[in-house]
Length: 346
Image 1 (cartoon, one colour):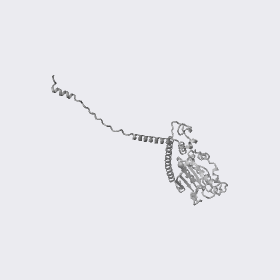
Image 2 (cartoon, rainbow, N blue to C red):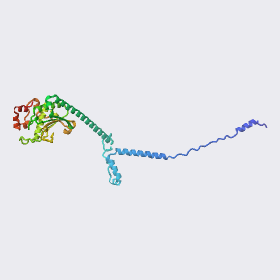
Image 3 (tube, rainbow, N blue to C red):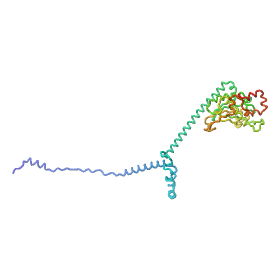
Image 4 (cartoon, rainbow, N blue to C red):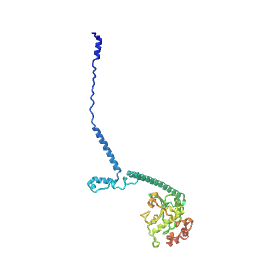
């Protein structure tokens, strides 16, 4: 029997050896817990609920908020008796509006618009006040220059006083002991007073502001014997006579805001009630604020047509405004021939 060579026999044994595969199993880490996800979800939910509550509080009307507060204060009472709620509203729009494009938040925007308009009005008012102050200062300098350049007016400078007051530029023409603007008990303007008034009227003709004119007397009672005629009527007649002179100088009549007689209620020298300086004519160039305070924002000036056409055409005015001047007969007699030119209007 033949046998295989030894070399071949050894090779077959090697081929028949079993192949062993060793598989190593790696143990994975344990599964982590999901508790943190639950906590995070609770936090997000709470934040969403908080911001939702803030939005609801901001968009809910005041009446609805009061109803909610009343419910939580006495829930049983509201549950038994009922209360105001969304079902009681006459409108499906929150806040009761009628425009679907509008929301409750527009109330706050309207408040903001009101504040903006208020600031705009205040800025405009401040700007107008500054313009008034500049205009009044320029007018004061202009009148001062007119007085300085006019020899006649410069002679009476001591009787012309100018001051800037909260109401505007105040021009006061006062009496002196030996140089009165009017005769005693009379409303006829003296010649030099006429010159002063016409120069002032020419300067005021181009001013945008309105004018307030007031007549004043001293505290001495009117003693010319006319019943019912007093310093009130005398101061008013003198103010009206001064108005005619201002208008005849070219100042528009509708520029006058008021013409009043104050008698002795506003003395220039209260400690000396009978001093001649208390007898004066006050011309005030009003600021816009003083004009609105005095006349209102919707004031429509009424042009007086009684005596202006006669003055401007050179005709003799009606004697009725000058009746007080004819009462003291001795005064007119003492004036002699000069009385006629006084009564005539240029």
